[in-house]
Image 1: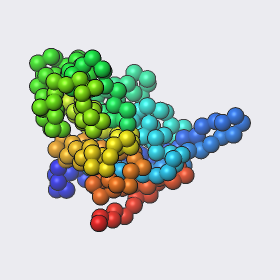
Image 2: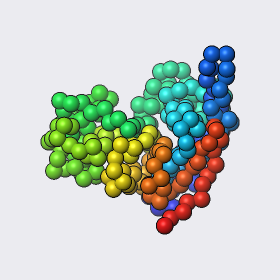
Image 3: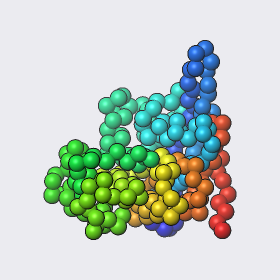
Image 4: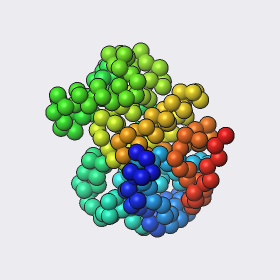
Length: 237
């Protein structure tokens, strides 16, 4: 999706987001009133040191962890005004997750991995198979779709995880350190696939990462430190 096609209005708006944790009698404030707009069709990297609040921020905006204060507006609706069932529906209908650990099922082929998640969501078998084959082709694994996880490299396993997510057609994709266990070439390819997913499917992709090697692939870079965020100037070599 190019700039002229991308909606001006953000798909996800974060306002005044705060989150604290208790450690004994001490209260540790992790997020300090964070504000951020995230857009469809864009790959955003959220970068910062360990303990800066990256994963806490991702958990809050993806409906995994309730913040103490603030709003997270998805298409003008505050997701945390929902009850538990409403939050579950938000994640199921709108969110896709990609993690460092791919959590593939050892006894299923690459194609079956992608079909299985759809079937759990109630998608009809014929449609699930069609979507699976489309997603597997998109990540370049058609010739290896019949293989088990043990027969795939680490990068190929991560591509299966991406295909599994893409087949669900989410509008919001959250990736947490997807390249940390991969070499530089493979890691870059994984992030390029996420950028293609953003543009081709009009998804918002937020990638939490320490990986400085992939900065130039992103559409946008947000830095976080001590619970505060700011937009970084992107330097492309």
